[in-house]
Image (cartoon, rainbow, N blue to C red; front, side, top):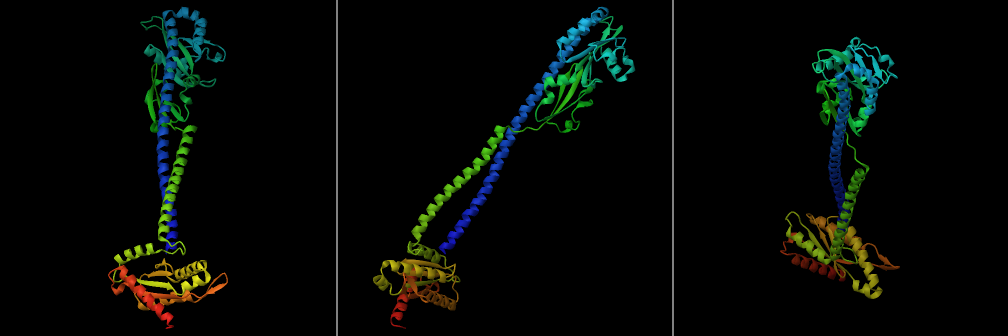
Length: 452
């Protein structure tokens, strides 16, 4: 039975390790997920900070360019005639002040008369805004506002996109009843956005709406319109004559260092679990070994007297009328002669052989112990039928005695005496039951000696 317990113990340890490992993996994954969420939340905050900085940069660039345009408007409004005369010089100066400005054009009576630089813009000269409704609408808005109107972004024929600042010019500034025409300043939208960095934020989708400064309900001119319904960030971007609306969806990714850290946490916790489990298992195994050695006969590896007396005390204390058990006190006959004739080493091997035969003759629910010297004790559990008891006793005797024990070529015929005492005999202590079994064993030994 001790062997069975050991097998079950090993299986139990493996099962416990497996269950514990699953638990540790679940716990580890939870910890890693929490850290992952924390890292991503931190990274999302960083992306938001990048977005707000880029948005601020874009607003600054726009207002800087519009301030330059406003300076141009002041010059024209003070003296339109003089400004036209010096337009080449004024226009070149404006282009030098900002690398975002692509060209500047003047349109007396809303017909383009001159453009700086002229290269790549020749076709624009002579264009009457009144023949192009969309553009003329922005010219009209600037005139109605009596102030700069920033339109766009619009697609340019020569490629790319641009914002167009329309500046209304009046001959009677600041009364503004005598309309002279308009000055248009084309600002490179793509260069402006690249410089601000709004569209270059890693792991971030951006959408913009509000053409011509119409804000949250204006047309989308950058990104996917659906983003506005699922964005992590929605906010306005101020432009000189209105606002744009910005939507951003963040997809924060872990840095290589963070990924390595999570891998170390995952592997580290598993390693710690294995080491701790191994240490606890070793300590437990040491305890079990010490305990087993204290309860096991070192020669035969059967249970020893100490174990058996403890087992019987527990068994006797919990016995029930319908759960009978029987004790078999067994003594090896002629053992002294074996030791005297063949030596103690042979005697020890005989004891080991008898122990193996006893163990093989009983059932898994039974217990076999060496009580000392050549004395053994068998506990037969769950015995209800006297006939069954007799059959088991006969089987034990036959198993031990049927074949010779041959050691180093020396044949030895084993012989045993058996005394039986059962819990049903209502002995009130285990000591009395053991004494009764011993008495009957000696009776059997006497009968064997007499040849009965």
